[in-house]
Image (cartoon, rainbow, N blue to C red; front, side, top):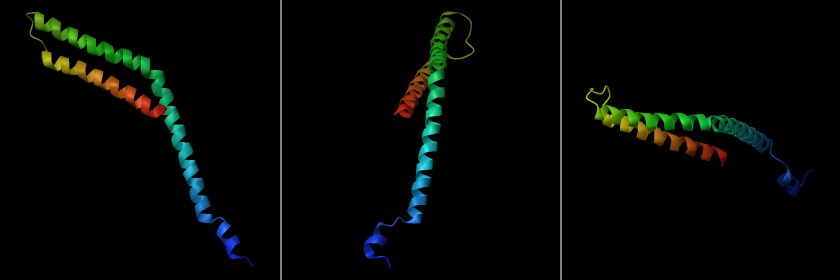
Length: 102
């Protein structure tokens, strides 16, 4: 016959299964997070170079078309917005890397 003290210290089967499921979820979540971090960190120099090049080239193309007599296929303000969008996208990429590395 078990006493009240023995019953209060016996583990509940539901809580053990819940703890195991929580630990498995935490492990899977961390594995996915680390895999994403490794891939994004590996691609970071290429993404930075690509976004910087697009930003600089769009501004230069806009300035060249602005100074020439040829009508531009894209308005000057659109090229500036593309450059600004590339810079914002680079900042978002770096912040995602920072959040995944924490």
